[in-house]
Image (cartoon, rainbow, N blue to C red; front, side, top):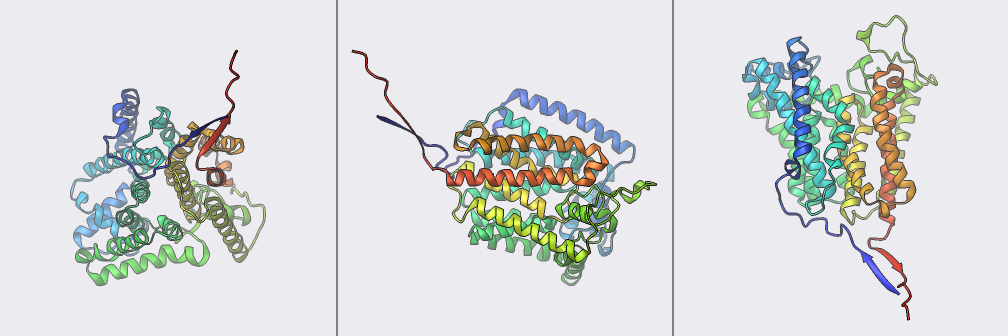
Length: 444
């Protein structure tokens, strides 16, 4: 009897810096450049028609920082002073230049995010199949376009979170906490990752993230805004945005807009299903409201349901990932993807452009599907179902009733369940795959 032992992905941290591999793949690069040209023409047409999205808000708050005006009470700006300070130098430019500079920055950040997702999932020693360069981007393309068209900040947040996860995979705790703290100081919905790294017993990264958060939130703006004014603006932002979520699982001061079908967060979808809330956005002025509720519960009862769902998500996460840290890159990549999906599900607000963060979970799923022998057949088919479900949910965003029912939210819940199943499958499986076989009989 002969024994053949296959050993894969046992070294998580032996990586060597290399030029991004996707730059050496001419067909993929040519296709990407062609898509960028088409997309840029579309954005230019939108700009000429006066459709500038949230970019006008970023420009205005940047100008307010330059002129020393207050950031308190602005209806469209729900961020801490940190982001306004970061865009202030860019606001010295004329608005048209600012608009396209911010667009170009986001394009570059998406390319960086693709590279980071591949590094997290594959490392630098394993060959990356061609489809993993373009298929993850294709599956989140609608959310990328949404970010670029609206001028939102989620691609920036994604790049920061992926950078943090990559450095964490290299055991560089102090460096890994820096981009995580910056991401939370810009947009607080990334905060659940702090809980993940605390649970994973990475004290250096946790401490670094807290110090980085304090620096970007309190110290960086203070010399420009003044310590007293900055403290006031941060406190008022926390009362306006963070407080309602922590107290009632509500999305700040968004009012009705936080409950219409554009919000695909678990909080909003559960409220639409359990309370009679008109799912049409206020600006639609539809003569007939859109109700999808299955019950009419009180706010207190809905809060209990949401807390129970959040507790269930945490329990599933803990059961899937276990107390021990991942043993190999495949398990680590899926666990990081699961943590990113959890960030989306715990958020009080999740407009469609938030779901660009699914880039990493999709990349991790494709990585393990490339060598599915470590997974059970159920995990393999579940991952394939989640990939197809994301594509279907994206198409259903064209239908108001599907969005009101939370099609994208439930597709994300499916991703959470499937990644949890795959993580548990990898964790409980053997670190070494041993295949036993008999030698063929020798002929006389």
